[in-house]
Structure formats: C-alpha cells, structure tokens
Length: 423
Image (cartoon, rainbow, N blue to C red; front, side, top):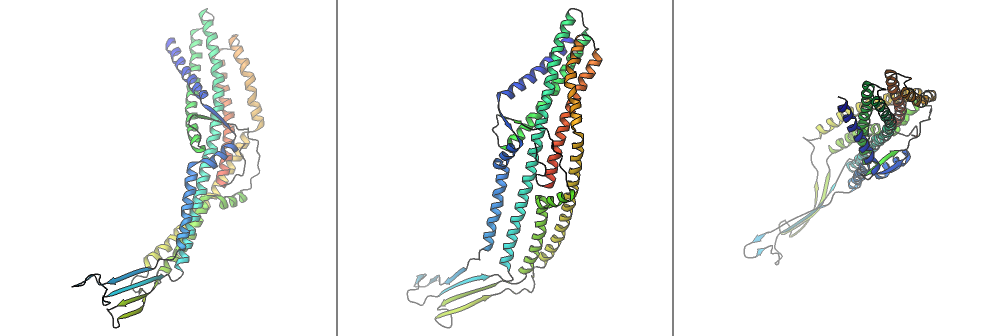
C-alpha cells in the first residue's frame, strides 16, 4: 500500500513538473490589461470580419440611390420569302424599337434609401454588441487566468513544503522516530495537492487557448497577465448608468433601430400600393398606318385587386412585435445595471484591506507551524488541519480579488462603457 501511494504521488508530481516545464519552454508574453485590450481591438479576426459586414451593408445605401435602368426592346421581321433573314435593304422590312424608363411614385426610392440606412444602423449596433461581448470575454478570461496562476503559486509552495516534509518524516520513519501512518498521510496530502495543481493547469491551458484566439497571439506563446490589486472605490449612480447603458449598449440600440425600421417598412409597403409609372417612346416602320411611326408609350398598373394589403398588415404587426422587444430590452438594461452595481458593491465590501492584511499573517505563521511539526511540537491531525486551512484561506483571498475584477467587468459590460478602469 505504501509503495502504491508513493508511486501515485511520484506520477502526479512528474505530471505537474512536466506541465510547468512545457510552460517554461514557450515564449512568455506579459501583458497589462490595457495592452491586451489594444491587441484585441486591433487584431481580433471576428471584429474585423464584422466590420466588413457593416461596410457591405453601407454599400447597399449607394445601390438604393440608383435609378432603374431604361429598358430597350425591338421587334423586326425575322424572315421573308425570297429576301432571307433580317433583310431591310429595300426599305420595306418591318422594324420596331422602344425604350422605356420606370419612374417610381410615392417616394419609393427615398423610402428604400431610408430602409437601407436602417440596415446599416442595425448592423452597426450589432457590431457594437459583438464588441461588447468579446471585450467582456477577454476581460474576464484575463482576470481568471491571473487568478489561476496565483493559485498555482500557492499549490507550488505547499507542494514544495509537503515534499520536504515527506523526505524528513520518511527519514525519521527509517530510524524508528516516526510512524508509517504519518508518512502515508503526508504523501496523501502531497498527492492531493499535486492533483489539484494538475486540474488548475488544465484550466490555465483552456484560458490560454481562448485568449490567444481573442488577442491573435502565436500558438506557442504563453500569455501572463500583469494585474494590480484592485483599489477602486467608485461611486456609481444607477440612474446615470442606466441612461449611459441605453446610449451605448448595442443590443438595446439594435432594438430601437429595429422599431424605426419597422415603421419605415410600413411606410414603404403603403407606397408600394401606389402604381409606378413607365414612360417610353417607340418607333415603328412599315407596320403602322404611316410608313414611319413615332409614338409615346405610358404604362400604369391598375390597383384593383392587389393593393399590397397583406404586406401592409404584416408590417403593422411587425411594428407591434418590435415595440415589445424594445420594452423587454429596456427592462433588461435596467435589471442588468442594478444587479451589476449591487454585485460590485458586495465584492468591494468583501475584498477589504483589513481582510487582506489578516490573511497575510498566514504566510508568517505557516513556516512556524511546519517547523513545529518537524520538531514534534505539533501533532499530525493539528498540522493537517492548519495546512489545509492555510491553502483554503489563501485561495479565498485570490478568489475574492477575482470576484472584484469580474464585478468590475460586469459593470462595464452591462453599462456598455468603461465605467471602472481595470487595474
């Protein structure tokens, strides 16, 4: 049993060591948040692709401004007996040509331009919302990666301490000054820490993958966040933040633009019920009451049956639909801002300087407790309890820092603007 535990512990330790060695073999890129943010805004492929989508939609405004092309039609004798195909040499062959131009009535062209502009507004709002979401993912991943790397330091410190203890107690056991139970229990403690560190490194690898994609960083690069301890204590006015959120959040702005677009579409559908006018001139030779005939052609559909009733009714329902979508967006913005501010205040309260100073005393106490156990001034059970308490306390400190960093990201995300600058 002792050999089995030792083998498992050695395997886990080897895995951790290899993971850290592989990490050290990569190029490390240390970034402050502002530097990471700049890389994200300049390089992110998803944002670049969406920008082209906005530009493509803008081009449709130019298309909507263009007039319809004139239409040219012709009719002439194809074949006559004895003369052959398309023979007009004697001046008696029949020939007809007409050119028409469509004139849109009821301001349809202007309404189409306005609908095209509405599409641009919606696309731009959706781009802003995409930017907001990707920026939030980057900010949270950046903070979480820093949190995990800080946890790694704690695990490494405790693994080194437990490793030294295993060696010392094993030596003592060899000369009869310690029990096998103490050796096995300490090895089990080290084994658990090493497993925790392996799981921690797995999460680090996943976040590295996400961040390298967001920041467009070389695949062999290891990103190391450089984050300062949050010291902000911003006073947040909820009413003002809600107004800011409505002005900046892409999802809310898109809902507003869709309501406007629905209204413009109804106006356009009503205009489609009014017939367009086609005017043309034609020339006819050898098939009319005079040898050379010049005529004026006017075409106007008669709206007796199809007056676009269905599309008009559908457009009215679409307006009602978008109005309720906007109301829901308005409610969501208010709830999101209030919840984010409350969470920020709670995280700020928990992450107080007094608590951090209190937790800091554990570092000094930890070394003295390890020494006391080595000198047999402290029992195994008491030592294990303190050992685990130390780890849990230190991890809670780091988690509280991450919770505050995430709360800051949540405030900025839900307001749609950088209200609190990340450290």
